[in-house]
Amino acid sequence: MIMIPFNYIAFINNLTDLVNKNIIPMSRIDDAVRRILRVKFTMGLFENPYADLSMTGELGKKEHRELAREAVRKSLVLLKNGKSSEDPLLPLSKTAKKILVTGSHAHNLGYQCGGWTITWQGKGGNNLTTGTTLLEAIKSTIEPNTEVIYTENPDLYHLNSSEFSYAIVAVGEVPYAETFGDNLNLTIRAPGPSIIQNVCTEIKCVVILISGRPLFITPYVDIIDAIVAAWLPGTEGFGMTDVLFGDHGFTGKLARTWFKSVDQLPMNVGDRHYHPLYPFGFGLTTKPTKAY
Image 1 (spheres, rainbow, N blue to C red):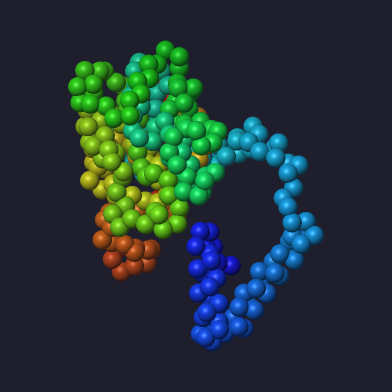
Image 2: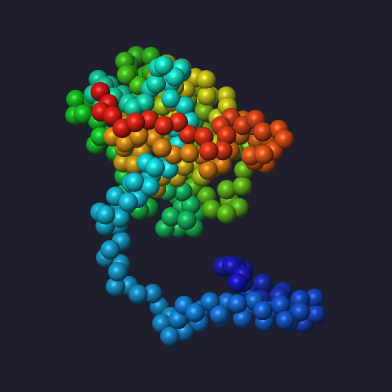
């Protein structure tokens, strides 16, 4: 099956020409068609070619979102927790006097979901689908007396003039699918690096990385108090706050090696020179607790 959505006429003409010139044997075409037809016959698509829409009312139901929320909190990986093991930052206090929430991904449902969400490449913003952003989940999780200051990219004056108990910084990648996501540098999208630098040198901070893969974070690890790989958590932002504030513990482990530098790639367990930033299977754990 060839997925050529826009230039399919040229593809058909070129393929036909290659068959007529005996460059591609007809037996190869027959084999491909036979395998596609076999799947369609097995699925009963010739008898019932259209989708059954009777269950569309079930989409997005509360129990389904609860399951998605559980998947989020179990897949998050805690990479760092405190400048030292004796002084962990997480779980965060729900009763802090004043906290800062910042970063390009803190209040962006499209960024949380990534590509292949409603549209092929996905897109940023909060109008693509229904769900809860990290910021919205934070505001619903903390105690009413805690003041939440949200600014996507705070300036140094704002940081120096305000007394924050801690900061939650959410940065990462923008949505992509297939080759549109090809990237030789794997860096955090600007202004993410400068936000980390400005915020985490002034305030105790946890950085939430929202991305479809490990990113280059080596220069920032030492100044960050806690680091969470949230991957693409999707619509259920409460899955992140469940573990950030200690209602559930962190249990997730890395499903692939986290590199120090892109120059190390490709890098896999068992390689002769295996010196990752975080190895395959790594993940700190915390216990559920009331965070005050």
